[in-house]
Image (cartoon, rainbow, N blue to C red; front, side, top):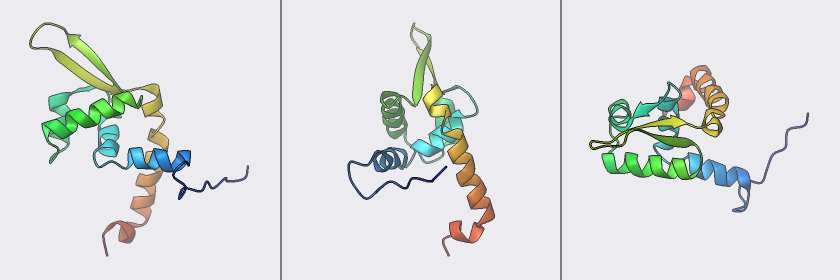
Length: 114
């Protein structure tokens, strides 16, 4: 099987568009967090120090629009209880992210900023 290398420098390239979407600051970290299973907003906020409530909410909404995350209402009455989980599409990112983790462990000098 030959490796096809797309022209990621072209704006219309699907690979470029995917990279731009995933490269948003908190998206990959949210995917890592949600790989552990469904979680509520407050739990995600605790697991991601530095993210504001507003940014977390906006990021989850955009990931839901992209089909990576689903929002499940657990309790309709106030106070509403909602949890977030990866969709089957979101779960397909586990393997490529595992490859990035393995690469980072193999090449610590490349990730240390030196």
